Image 1 (cartoon, rainbow, N blue to C red):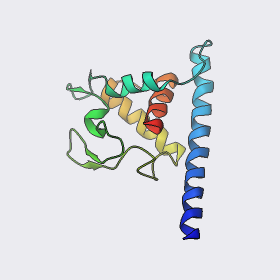
Image 2 (tube, helix red, strand yellow):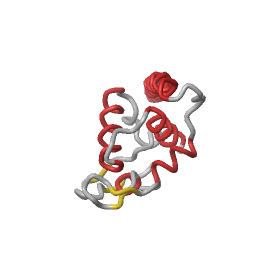
Image 3 (spheres, one colour):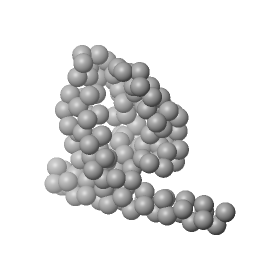
Length: 133
């Protein structure tokens, strides 16, 4: 039992460290984009996540089209039907544990939904929403 508790604590510390470092580096980029920038915002992240846009395949989609609105549950990719594991790190300990993966998926998903790469502020807002949902 003690091993399981220690493993969970270490996993949560790893998540926290990676996400804190990632958000810190995004914040530095955000300040360069907008010198009056203060903090990432859950509400702006929620709006970005749920708002629909004509995506790269010409269809009206949002992040929720593939990830769903309950980020603690698996969902299906809108285009392929493949199962996507829960996005919330509260439900899926693999999420937000590798900076390169975070960057890769944010870039890909922003391109899929918005037909462009997200700004540092947008990325930070979306990540803030996801990790706090």
